[in-house]
Each structure stands twice: as C-alpha cells, then as structure tokens.
Length: 337
Ligand code: SAM
Figure 1 (cartoon, rainbow, N blue to C red):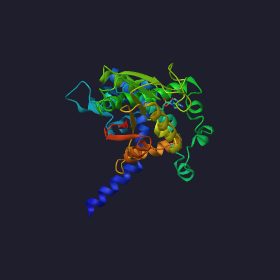
Figure 2: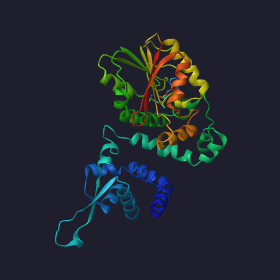
Figure 3: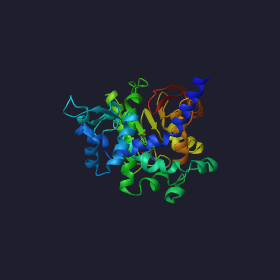
Figure 4: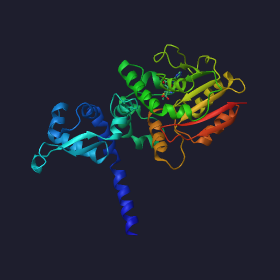
C-alpha cells in the first residue's frame, strides 16, 4: 500500500511539474545551450553564463535542471586529480540533446520547440476557456478572431517571420517522423504522389528517398510553395497517391468531409490516400495532449483510427489500413474502391 501511495505521489508531483520541465527545455533551446555545448563541451557554469550573457545564478539553476531532465550530463572536470577542491563540475550534451536539440542535427526539433514556446505555451494558459467554449484561443492571446476562413493566412502567413517559424516547426516534425511514415506501408506500386498541404516538402522528400520510382508534388497555399492552390477551392493535381499529413486535424468534421470527398473524386480505383495523423488511442498521453493543442490552435482535433476509417469509408475508400509508428504521427492508408 505504501509503495502504491509513493508511486501515486511521485506521479502527481511529476505531473504538477510538467510545465516547468517543458519551459526548461524551451528556454535552454532558445538560449542555444545545446549548440554552445556542442561546439565547446565541458564548460563550467560560469563559462556557459558568460557565453549566454546571462546571470551565473540563473544559468547554474537552468543547467542543473537540464541535468535532472536528462538533457545535459554533469561531469567532474578540472586539472588536478589529487585535490577535489580543484575539480569543477562541467557540462556536456546528453545523447538525447545531441540528437534532437542541437540546431545542426538532421533530427533537430528546435523549430517545433520554438513554435511550442512562442505559440502553444501562451495558448495553454487559456485551457480552461478552451474547454468551456470549445474553440481556439487566439483571440485571447493575439486579439485575432481565427475561423475556418483565415486560419493559416491570418495566423501564420501574415508576416514572413511568423510564416518561417511555422514552416520550421512543421519541417522539424516531418523530418523526425518522415522515415517512419514513408515506410509504414509499402508504397512502391504508386508512381505519382501529391502531398496536399505539404508545406516545406520535408515529408515529400522522405517519400521520394524511400521510393526512387515515385514522383512527389507538394501542393500548398501560395504563401508557402510555388506549385500552389487552395485545397478547398482549387482543382487537385493528378496523382495515384494523395498525402494528407497533419492537415485533417486542423479542420471541423464538415471541412474534413468536403476535403475527403474532393480527394475521392480525384482518385481512380486503386489510387489511395495516405492520412498521416497522431491517432488517439485512449492510452497514450501524447495524442490526447496534442488534441487539446489542436482545440486551442485550430478548428479541429485529433481523431481515433476508427474515426478516420469511418470517414474514409464514407468517401469510397473501402480498404483502410492503420500503422502505428510510435513516432509523432501514425499512418492510415486508404485505397479507393
Ligand atoms: N503536411 C505538413 C506536415 O505534415 O508537416 C504540414 C502540416 S500543417 C499542420 C498544414 C498545412 O496545410 C500547412 O502547410 C498549410 O499551409 C496547409 N494548408 C492549410 N490550408 C490550406 C488550403 N486551404 N489549401 C492548401 N493548403 C493548405
């Protein structure tokens, strides 16, 4: 009984501190602590503080918090092995930081981290209102009323800095999840694919790498790509395989139906749609928390595998298969009857 009690208490304490841990990760990333320790591993706290032009007290607290969260490793440095007092604590990036937090790593998540810190973090302070009202909370944070008609244009694409930040965020997630998405199903029988709402082309690039015989087009809003169009208004380019990666989760059921009906009309029998989304499964916290994030940022939400299956079947995709990647996103392949 005592052990259970202690485990429950530990869990509650961890959950209560979750927001602090996130902010430590975002702040250390923003201050480029991990880039600094990549180029100069083994710095002492005072050297880090000096390089960041930050206070010694604050930097030491942040570095120790990073160690406790597995982002940094603390080592004993110093020149003299004989005199302990001459040994100083030095810091190095952990393996996790090397892989995901250094800006030059191919799997760097810094773009997404910046988006979480600057956009998602302020929105989450209005979670209670989002739950009460069931809508996104941009009006409270930026004063903008965001609806289906202006979601991307007014929120992200109104200024180059915001647009690039959003694109960096999408690019970094697609870079990490892309290889798992590309290989979740054997797509080698398709010759042409069109990534609808494909943003920077990061997912398209992964697909082209995995299937050298596949020619992939990226279709997105004019602010984002040259080959542009509006998913809801314009004719879709011809392809055997349409990709909808993290697009459906932005929209209401009504818009999702409109989009799937359009994709279905563009498909011939045997053509397919690859839906790439974080699937709610009633157990993992990542999809459930991501769904709250969608509630607060967009017009949409995350859905379960069976909800997507049902939606796709309603639009003439009889053969629907689901692959869980255990990455940021899962994959649903649906083949047109
Ligand atoms: N598919 C990318 C990925 O998985 O990283 C980006 C996902 S992002 C959440 C949604 C994308 O849909 C953005 O690139 C956005 O510009 C695009 N988009 C939104 N509304 C659109 C529209 N009406 N027509 C075309 N693209 C649109």
